[in-house]
Amino acid sequence: MREKCSAEENTGFTFSDAFPVTVPEYFNYGFHVIDKLARRSRNRLAMIWANQQGTEKRFTFHDLSNLSNQAANLLIKYGISREDRVFILLPRIPEWWIFSLALIKIGAIQCPSPILLTPHDIRQRIQFGHFKMVITDRFNADKIDEIHNDCPSLEIRMIVDGERDGWISYSREIQCPTILSRHKVKNAALPRTRSSDPMLMIFTSGTSKMPKLVLHSHGYPLGHRVTARLWHGLAENDVHFTVSDTGWAKNLWGNYFGQWITGACLFIYDIRGKFHAEELLSVLEKYEITSFCAPPTVYRMMVLHDLKMFDLRSLRHCTSAGEPLHNKTSRLWQEGTGLTIREGFGQTETVCMIGNFVGEKIKEGAMGKASPGWNISIHDDGGNPLPDGETGRIAIDLKSRPIGLLEYYVGSDEENAAGFINGFYYTGDKAWRDKDGFFWFVGRSDDVIKSSGYRIGPQEVEEVIMHHPAVQEVAEPASKPISC
Image (tube, rainbow, N blue to C red; front, side):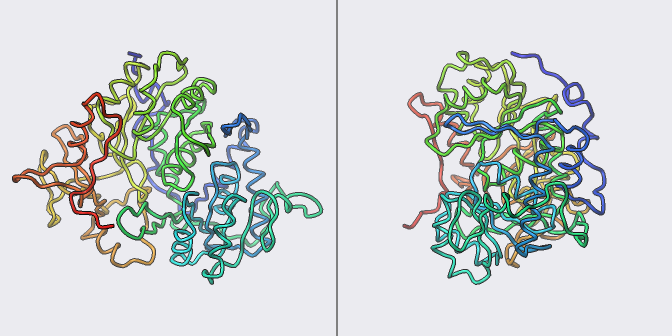
């Protein structure tokens, strides 16, 4: 097994330095992080982008600063201003980051969305969120045209590749005769964004009902310093790769905010076709990835191959989130690479709020300990704190509101009333905490099975089934009957 290093040895600073004690009154990620890095080190690499066909592009922070300024000026030209709502439906292409940064710079509110959404899903979300503009590509434009007339708030459609009747063409606009400045955002009256101003909306996965619409402020990216520094273990010279679609919060966790705050380089792999585990292992080797994060399902597919056939010497840190990591997968990965997969826990509503952090002791199967700045306890259904060892609801104390927690759910008094109760935010998950402060996930509050007086979480059932040699993947659904 590879020798472990402490958090200080790996990142250059201590746990107490990993998150800002206070959030500044004014903060804008585009100006204060990307543009600052661009000025400090003009040639520092920010992103390596590649697709399954072998095409590769590289961007410095200077490139991203210029391109996002240009995109911001284009948005202003077509009437997008402060707190206008923009729906982004783009795959893992550089334009996603360019327009996201541009929207942050001008103070507009963006909503990244998965490209797998159907026209029905898109209609539902645009109507609910009252979005003024959509930015997409030629592969998804038909979906927008199909529902456009049903969405009265949707005034502007932009396509990033090619041209289309009734649409703004990004590729045409950035060429002559229209010249858009790359050096600065041309709006002298552009107001500074406060850290508390709205920046981003994102829908939850909505597994059982209409997805909730989460609102995050401009201060939200600062919370991901913990995600990147302490969980991913990143420093300036790292190349980090997170497997995630651009429409999920995991992309914000692993392919954006915290990673660039540390000055690390992102590796973005544009997966459109069928996923092959060997393909990812080859990518880890070719691009000398130093930090890797993927859902447990991806790891489970990767450990089916002979990991020692790949040169993964550059890889230093491996993390996982999104679902419980089975012990069998963790053991096989460690045997093949010498590295421990460190789990983290959070939601669309949060940053990494619980994790197994760099240099800290790990208990197999545990989610980890509470992140710095997050006061987390376990409550019963009545809101009373429970002692260690007892299963209950995960509760976050709001007396000292943690950095990176959602502001509120948009357009849903019911969800806000259910989530925010008597000075606490409840995640909707069941867990227990041991005497050492480690949290152990049990399941969603509505997924816990009661049998003969015992409370059984889906993970416990899945863990037992996974031990059978014929089982590659398992999912334990809720105990309630599903009607079709």
